[in-house]
Amino acid sequence: LLHFDPGLAEELLENPDDVLKAAEVAVKHIDQEVKRFHLRISDLPESAQIKIKDIRSEHLGKLIQIDGIVRQKSDVRPQMVVARFECPACNTTHEIPQLDNKFHEPSRCGCGYKGKFKELSKDLVDAQRIVLEENPEKLEGGEQPKRINLFLKEDLVSPLGERKTNPGANILVTGILKEVPITARTGAQTTRFDLVVEANSTLTKEISFLDLTITKQEEEEIIALSK
Image 1 (spheres, rainbow, N blue to C red):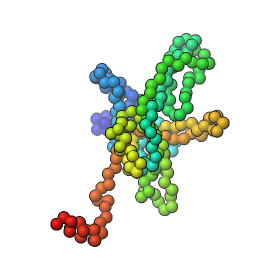
Image 2: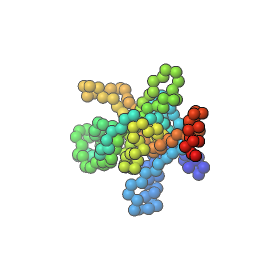
Image 3: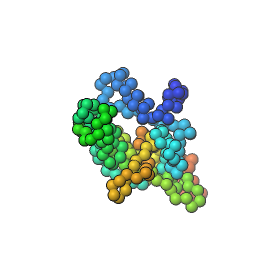
Image 4: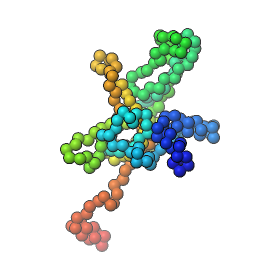
């Protein structure tokens, strides 16, 4: 993509939601029979490769690449991603994305109506949450490894894709950093936000043979076995 159109590649990093959606629409224009198409991105430039401990609010809404060890993963369950509502005053349809555990409804309509909206439909997809922890070997001194939540859905949680993200797996994740409101025990929304990476792609990082250290005794045993 970078070789084909550097401007488009930069736009993908800065406004990934819009560019990925445009790609899906473009593919449907090419082939009307395509029902569910998702563009999966990998090999981001160094500027977009971020350590978990270095993630800040400036990265919100951007496409980033992180790596780490899978520490926890939830079961795959249906989750609502979009809910559609109708304004009872003017019949305008409102499409509200559902990005966290709290159900979101429209607060008001462009016509001025404030009140209860009629729910028309909702989109459900298979989804899973994963806790990703920094690689211990990349820590300095007595640093404690930082963690971040990942949100995976659709083909990323298929039986084939799910095997890549078992606890203990070392994975490379490309995704969009998003904020999730933190709710107080009283149910009120606080001014603080938690961070979650909505995964676009996951790759298993294999251990390179160059990273292996073999002792003289192990070398002798390997040679003996080979004979």
